[in-house]
Length: 118
Image (tube, rainbow, N blue to C red; front, side, top):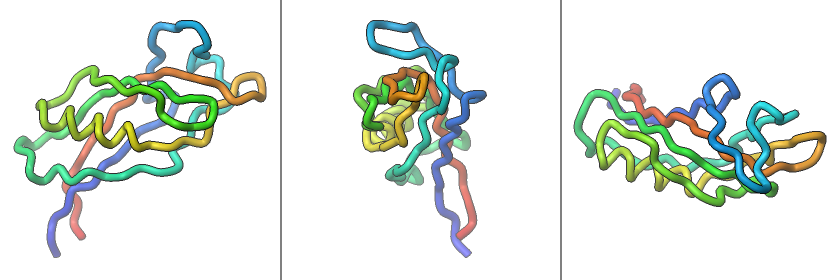
């Protein structure tokens, strides 16, 4: 067996935090259906040092499920922060809905990498 690094995204409303609301954005708490991650592209982070590999990013998800913008809130290292930004920019979601209609939402979410046996 060998070790590999896997990325886990915790994208439940309990793990996400709303950020300041601006024009056109729906508050996370007002969603009928939260965004559901459809695709992601793991970035190998085994070359980065440190036992804990975690970042928190703020993402804006458009009505069609594409990620419009990503910003880094915090990370265990600059390298992990850059990897988190790279990953989050490529995500695609089942669009969030508010009052039955696709909605644009901005939220914070953690990204954590951990060693797994393969």
